[in-house]
Image 1 (spheres, one colour):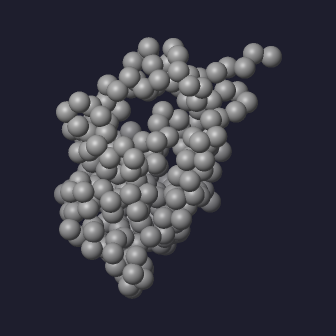
Image 2 (tube, rainbow, N blue to C red):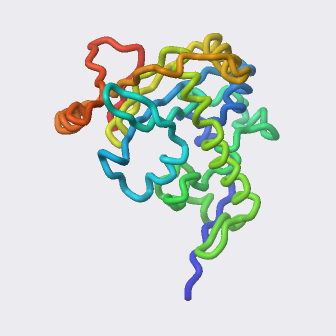
Length: 247
């Protein structure tokens, strides 16, 4: 039986460090802020009891927190992402990482996928074709590089461990509107000082408003009707403090 092998050799082009948001663990988010970087907070909501989801959403369930929304209970995922929409602030003029030894887990894992239900697809990555032609074996049909596998497992565990704290941080900052998973993203460009303070409070175990009534924003009429019928509170404001990015 043929064993499909994926090889990869980084050519140092820096493309993967530009024009993107970089998912961070809570500790990495603190370090990012301490280095002077900005963070975007992405909020997604879903509900497996009312709207059955595909099997690959099992990964999302593990990194979500149950919250109250109107007369319903939904799951919310808070993703803290380093703002590299221009480029990563740690990327040097030579396209080399200035914090390479301390770089985030997601950077160490790239181009592998953290979600266990996704496979590496070179054609979907920003890297040029030649980087896949030689180099170390990342994975095959039968095995993943053990160092990479350990980092992937650490990242998944951090997602689970940080889930509640990240949602509490959002509640403390009044970020309580999420987009419906698969429909859109609700993106908050968080104030650095306020975010650092909120993380510190949650880390210290200080009481923060955990009884926030969460809302959901959608742009699909049928989904809007279904959520409303399920008792989910919807955000109907014309002006919002977040960016609503349809998928």
